[in-house]
Length: 161
Image 1 (spheres, helix red, strand yellow):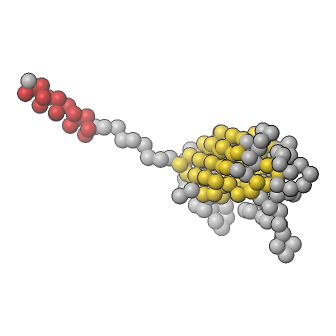
Image 2 (cartoon, one colour):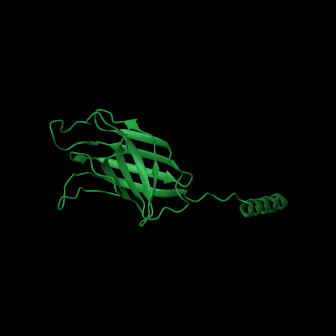
């Protein structure tokens, strides 16, 4: 009985020594929460973010959660992205949206997802790979939710530490 116990203890110690390491979190950037766009102008200048102008009317978003992996895979879940002004207030404006990740502060690189339609409640899910693939380190990450053409932003992600 004692030999079995010692043998078992030895096997347990050996297994712990050769245990497979658990991979670390492979997130390049995370975002939790969203900010809707407002086309306010300060001194005649539109509310540009990373050089992208806002949509022509204000937009609101109820929630936004996004995760970008270091291999360029992106998952975005957005809820309640709706117009906050104009005759179609409270509607999705018939829009499709895409995600754009910007990395870097001075000369940012831009990385796009594919486009998906907003449902009637303004909900959407984006999952796929960013093109081009983001750099290994994404300093000062900014995530915008843009129209399908990528010419106007409707919401921005709140970076999560």
